[in-house]
Image (cartoon, rainbow over all chains, first blue to last red; front, side, top):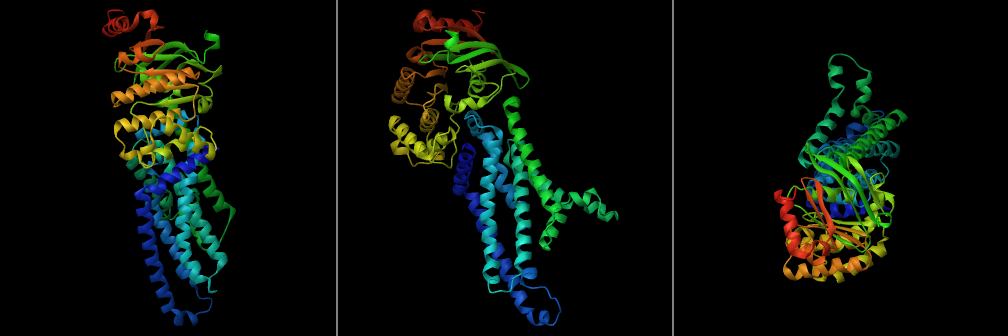
Length: 251
Length: 243
């Protein structure tokens, strides 16, 4: 199964790439610090919270803000992780080797995508381990945490697909990273202008990624939000596959 | 001969960077045959080889590989073609052994078969000492040998070598010639692109000369009267005397 072979090859490369390790170490250290601070504040506010009816709990005040912090970091981490996946290979000539191995573009793109998803999955699990360990004492709202985890996972998968599409579009990894960052920020904030003009509920609201994540972070799982992420991922991967397929014609 | 040829190239052309890099090139190649592809810089050799390897699609023309349309379905390259591009592109983060296993699995071998194939080619090309070394720290000659090993690991029916003797020392060049002849004796067809005429004389059965993207000469080497005659033909074409 050659797409699995591409995944294995990419995972091996990620495993020995200093950038991947540096990103993992620095971001997990930052997230651990955020978690400790959030937990400290939560414990310090216990007396006040006890006096409030339906007060927010550990999940609302510690676990979900931690996942929201991971999403913010991912705006930078995912483009850095994906920038070389295709652009770097195109630059060094190894992409042509993959093509000459008779691999159709979709197998190359999906193989690489699955490898990045595996890395991001481990990153999410390492982050999630912190609230899971504390929440195991019984104070977590598991349903809400599951919904927020799903939302975070979908954002990571979407950003990975966008990063891969940008990497497929150029031979320069730095340009791919910048493109992915700009597209991500644009998708995140595209409804701000409409909101400032007093318009809401339109197409731009639907287009903004932040709105779909917010629902999931609140524990609200709707098919509209899931479909938005699925469409965004499918669109980005299709663009990457088409661009890679055009390499045989364009070079 | 053409009907039974492993490779049949008919009228392939390709434009690159706004100019015609290859124009109406046709030739065939039988199993067990070694074809030397000669030409000055910019003659269209690498573009031709990229089209034959499946990395580039011809604008026009057809390529039949083992009787199948290779342009329409480049997937048939998977097990039939081994390609060593110019400058042997490699993944710097992977070791020699990992490269060979990766190439074997990409060509469809199971993990166990890939390990066995890697061991075989490591022994054959005497890469044992470099087995665990990362490609990023190899010398140019060692990279070239690893690139050759990657092209050979799945024992392809068609071996395409673009300047394989680059950066090799004379002993390694001798070894390369032996490997090429071995593959030909085993029934593989080999295309050897080089600037070095002596290289062609030493290992090739036939020689094709490209100039300005066009095939200007395609004849058995013996028929062209050996090295001196080949030199005269080549310089005649390259300088325009034979135009």
